[in-house]
Image (tube, rainbow, N blue to C red; front, top):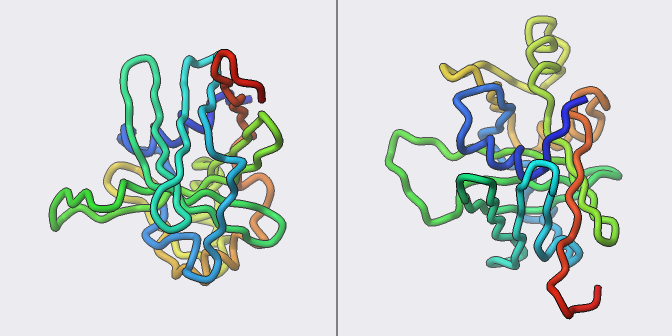
Amino acid sequence: MRRAALSAVLLASILSSGCLVLSLQPAYDDTSVAYDEALLGQWENADDQTSVMIERAQWRSYRITITDRSSMHTFQGNLTRIGSSTFMDVTEVRGNDLGPYLVPVHGIIRVKADGDTLTGSDLRYDWFLQAMPRKTLGRLAAAMDDRRNVILSSTTAELRAWLTRAPADAFDAQTTLTRKHSPGVLP
């Protein structure tokens, strides 16, 4: 069973040369953006020495800073509820324009905060590799880019409809982060 923290998933989306499932469109729209204060704070996975700081950002969004043993990266996050699940849509921080030939993409992570535990699972790359040639994605449009990432190009509405009924095995194994409390501060 793959044991990587939610932070590793987020970090991989900026550092990886492939093997990700990304979307050209967000998983949220103006009417479905949610906000949950329970996500705010410092989270860590001691096993892989990774930490995630989730802070309040503009208009019901999050600033997510991921630190591992060798680097630090910051993302914008938007929470949305689809059916009985909650998803964090992550992308580069807004306002960073890296040029006209770079297209912003969205990582989609199913998340759940329960007290001092934050769990998450991203879309499973291997599942999409098998589903694409079998044409079992329904109305969800997907293709491979030159870095071997799976790129979803469906509209937000089609993506949300698919996520409502997505098979359980379309997601990676759930990973866990624990809230880090400051010394002298009670939870």
